[in-house]
Image (tube, rainbow, N blue to C red; front, top):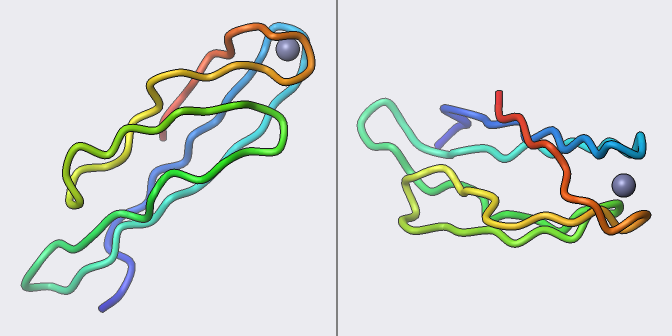
Amino acid sequence: MGVIDTNTYTLTCACGVQESLTLAQYGSAYAAGEWQKGKSLARFTVEWETPLNFVAPNVTAAKCNACGGTPEIKVS
Ligand SMILES: [Zn+2]
């Protein structure tokens, strides 16, 4: 089992706060495996949705801890 895919989630708030998190999917050449579960961030309050283990987690809600604003989220 190795890392077969990664998603980097970058959250940027209008107040200047930015944080990014990378989640990995584990699997083999024969079978795609589980994604890591969404983690909590230091600078944002984030809610994750993981509908299925082999689908990348989604951010359903995020809030900046500094100003309460809603950050822009980029997944790459
Ligand atoms: Zn902010």
